[in-house]
Length: 326
Image 1 (cartoon, rainbow, N blue to C red):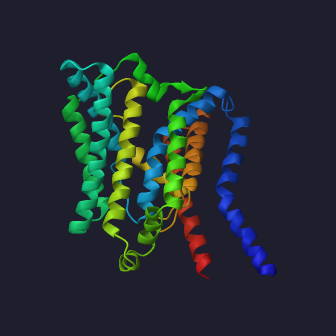
Image 2: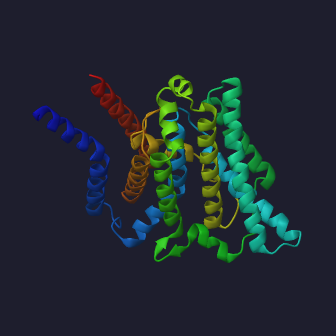
Image 3: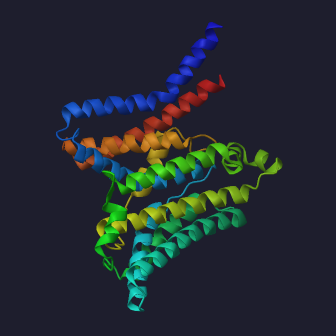
């Protein structure tokens, strides 16, 4: 009886250890980092975290399914560039700016989803690892962004468009509200739908999932398509924030996104991870980066700290997995 109680207590501590560390980090920075506890800084952290967090929620499903997407940073830049270029061309053809932006946005989201589906098709047909497929996509999308913008920012947007990436609703940054809504949607999707259960089954044991009647191809392709579309949504919001489609935005975002998922408890081997864990992991990473910046820690050392954090999260997950098997 006592052993069972100890196991339950340890499980509950493991479940909330990241939240406890996040709270401790916030308290520490509130006393040591100038300006950290101000409302403006908190809102700034929320805004910056939300842009990457939207993508991280989709990446969680991809990683749980046993795959990975390295192209999301380039997808953000391409989405912003494509939205700007299409808006400019449609407005020049006589459409009103609201109509041009709406059509450009929908087209961009559909294009992003198509890239994810294409990655899934190649993965299924030729058995090429998604690591290689999305690495190629990362390079290609960067090239496409440069081609359609000719290497310069494109700025066809009206002032009101900035609200999507830089506005406030009820005093809260609009991107943070979008992040929260997508978090709730993804939480429902992974916990309460057949697709969510299929994602865990496929990531845990692909062959067993196939034998039980689950479509491995559909599950992985849908996960990749959804993540690519969320990256496109983030790209549109970034373009709205800076009021231009810029081909050089979001450099290295894929590393931050994957870091948040891993810190949140997901395993790169698949089958393990939670949407809520990624949500907290993204907040933790955002707070850490913001705190190091306010403390004037050298940027190069910031990369060292973030790298050590990722390695530590992987080792912790591995230790927990090995302990569970004993």
